[in-house]
Image (cartoon, rainbow over all chains, first blue to last red):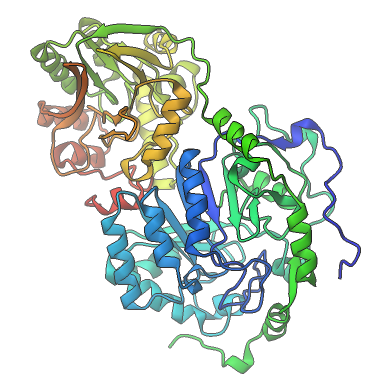
Length: 299
Length: 334
């Protein structure tokens, strides 16, 4: 327990270790809170059925941010959790979002029955802007996936993807590097083959590194002290490659710098988007992962 | 039969039990602590500006950025096109169409090379037509001697074909042509009637930003035009044309490309005709037919990938597909 821990601001850093917000292109929503119907052992924010660190966001709350975001010219909206489709207002939230811009949802794929898939396809058809879904899987089969995501999840995710494909939706499969060989060409081909078998003629895949925080830190160990950005790491042309140079994350408790650090109070930047247009210090070890791996949570 | 561990034999049961044991506790970094402590820390963190400062911050964000680009014109009627991609036959047809329209000026939004055959054949047509060009990522890369086109693709297959095109063009462009590309401006401002238009390759922010119809929302365009202090924005780079009249009365358009068809099963390519009609700006995206079988034959003589030839002959893209957003991808054949 961190009984004595407080949210005191970090010590002043070298000015080159601050990332400026170039343009607010991407707005994330922690729309499912940290509540999930799974308890994956690599989850960087330890989501589970009982984790209420962040609560779900309602349509009214999301709509307030959408209004402010439109005035600031946000280009795209991403939804994550927890599991977004546990949120009873998720489809209404998507309809409201697609009226002002493209939307992507990061989901565990367990809640895609045929009726919901048809409703999502209808939403996509009716909108001027793109609707994209990202479904997570962490292995080529149940033997490799289920120890990470939970017993029986491999088969249930495949069923969800099959239902999406039958409705005409083409989700991006998202795999983490927990899955051995996923970054190599042969590993990717195994996933493409799997997706083709589920009815997706044009398979899409995104592979992400893991962040050694939350449950993942328990699984494989936390960051080591050398895994931090230092003044010498600043690239010549700045930090534009980092997602935080163009994104913010709204949760039920305010606006945070990025989707990764929502369980760090120090990464909360303000109450409205206008509060968060300044720069942010790159002093969390997860910032090191984004820099070294060139990670963007965007599709 | 798929492997399915019985629920009571979950090898990670212990880890998962720990994960679900935090009712009433928050995860803070790697630790658990009472929810109210996390929430209090979150409430205390970050800024909560007073309303007038919020308004000022938002207004500052939207404020016009200084841009010394001189304004050309005013004109009554111009033709604007993008992405020649070495398609000298389409360029010749474009010049004829511009003459038929009575265009007072012709603008090219960059990407002279790539995809098609014989890069140097484009050059005399540009001179003959008095085409005023800006740099695309291709010109920027060729002039700087870069190893790749900086198209901005993320998929290995897309990058493979982009690399083939780029190397073909780089090897066949003379040093003088490349140096000339480096002298082209990155943007132009052109007045049509009463409207001042900003002409860019990708976006006003990045030479290789993709502005597709389904991922370029109206509110985003309004802010982009505020920041650019213009009445209209013209871009290319994606290869897929669209146009929007914004609620503010301003205009934005992607003029498409004349180098390859617009992934719609038609062999014609696209360009834009802009004219001042009684004080109103009209933007028409028009199809342009050219001798595409002759281009396909030349591409085969040059041993360019058959995938490219197929696109010229069918109007459907076979490469650069992974960068398409969901909606544009759904509308494509491959």
